[in-house]
Image (cartoon, rainbow, N blue to C red; front, side, top):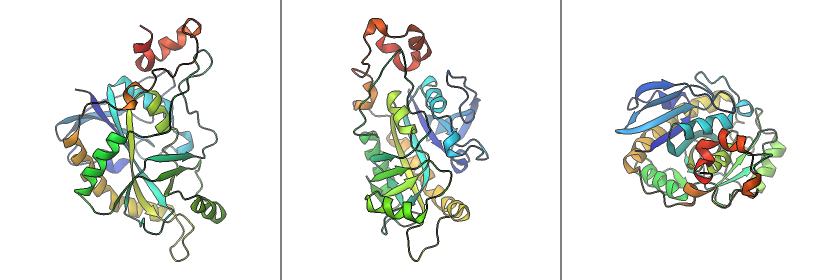
Length: 285
């Protein structure tokens, strides 16, 4: 059975319902992932968990090796990947402790490598719908069983960090109409699409960024405190989702690379095919 991947923080790999069976260190062509992958079971489904920032939260958002993380999931047979992350709210009604399941992203990161490909194989993958809508539906259905405070859909604005926003930035971002703001889901979502994984994220609201006139501006203490409140909800949602998976992968994600390689077949770099075999191998047999 294909494995289900979960990428997030320490509150997830300490889940009482997660039975860890093994720790797998993976070597990738892109270097080391954030940590060893935890192989285990959740609701009797085989899962692969990775601490996005490393255990102990030692890696800031801009230094995460996103390519290695996603490549590792692919190597380990993951087909569905669920991200869990803390976010700031850009809308009054999305209060701290709310859950948002975004369906769009706006990428403001500046120095992160966002593709597995390059010279020798030019690839232009479709990304109009940047998450798996089927997986979004499943997570929303699961979340509603746990809490009414959940929003399906919305725009996740990803900033470079590691600093929080200035007030000027926060007001401008709010005027753009985005729903939530974070630092980690890009280029994670782009790479998951290139790897043909069904990907989406459970975004847990911890604060109002810095735009709110009566709420305190975002701080690490505030994020950690509210995240701890949210994590129990996220754990319950993940357990519910496991009961709904797997499903037939009849979505675009499963064959996203089909037709995306623009380089003439005879001109494709053979070494790149070899290096990216878990991702592109089925197209170059």
